[in-house]
Amino acid sequence: MMEVNEQTPSTPGKLKPDKSPYIHHRFRIHSSLSRLTLCSSFFLAFTLLLFFFILSPPPPPPAAPRRVLGDSWGGPLWEKRVAKSARRTSASGLTVLVTGAAGFVGTHVSLALKRRGDGVLGLDNFNRYYDPNLKRARQRLLDRAGVFVVSGDVNDATLLRKLFDVVPFTHVMHLAAQAGVRYAMQNPGSYVHSNIAGFVNLLEACKSANPQPSIVWASSSSVYGLNSKVPFSEKDRTDQPASLYAATKKAGEEIAHTYNHIYGLSITALRFFTVYGPWGRPDMAYFFFTKDILKGKQVTIFEAPDGGTVARDFTYIDDVVKGCLGALDTAKKSTGSGGKKKGPAQFRVFNLGNTSPVPVTELVKILEKLLKVKAKKKVLPMPRNGDVRFTHANISLAHRDLGYRPTTDLETGLRKFVKWYLEFYSGSGSIKKAAW
Image 1 (cartoon, rainbow, N blue to C red):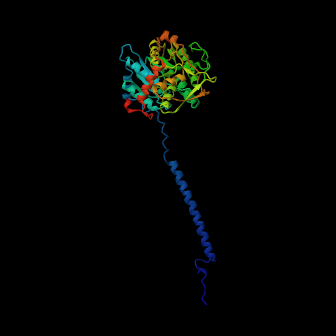
Image 2: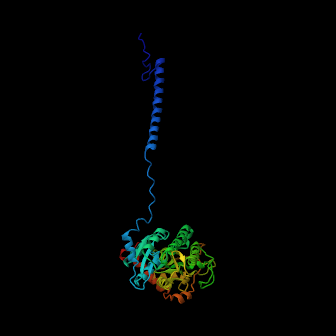
Image 3: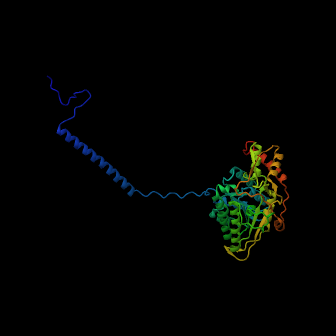
């Protein structure tokens, strides 16, 4: 009988356990050594890693965030361009900084100033409240006219100081602002940032400048708010704003008065009444009504809660520009120097309207006639979004002091707007290169 070896499997593929004490002891030693080696390896790795961090030089501090405007201003070539744009060609001309220069009113005012020989420098942050392509198109228009628009924000104090260092501005036309009544319900912070903080920052730069410039700035008819007395006069109460936008413009008027009183800044506020015309703002009713009518889309017309008419004192852009230039020309010099007042300074408020309120329903009828397209209309009650039922300007003060005389009726002004719109936009709504 064959002797069976204990190391031989009794079943193929299986190894019988080793019952030898020596073998068990050997396995225990091997296992302990393995664990010790593993722990030693971890300890060594940890020690080396610790020494690496201790002995290695500290990492460099994180780079400071780049200035948003860092690549768009500064340097000899930039300063030369700024100075050239602000150089007046008329001996009696003004030297004007126009904020919001790539905006609707800002573009027209800048072009009018440049045409008559004034030195003009623009400033605009090209925000995305509405299509920036339209703003860039206005910028190209200004550039061809010799007006350089600096890409910057009125909240950038360093940039403003630099501009005043390069150019001794005689006047500032402050049009930069967050516009729109309804948008304030979506982004209220943008109104405080631009219309209040930005305005204060600009006034700080102006009061510290030497010489101090005279300031003309855009307030709004919205400050009249829930006032029911018509037509609206500069002497009427303005303490019942119906929207945050209106409240920031009212706050701006009070802030302006404070800087006038303390620092001797000459300040004129212009309350615009529904300005319209070529190169206008896409968020305005006449603009998006035109767009929607041409595309066959429904246009919504609001009526007052009692079913009454909603009307606006539509004011054509050319008339408003004449009022702006009149305000600049009649503005007296500021009386301060180095931030210190030396005497009383001029402070004025004017309405710039058309004195002829037109129902929004009539606006749509005129557009239907000019576009030769029947509008698909939907009438709804006016929502509680800050809009007011009507606006109507008393312009007797502006007529007396500025020689302000609006001459453009709504149909004439809309005809010019529609002509521009059709030339500027293709049927798909994209900008036509041929417009240039």
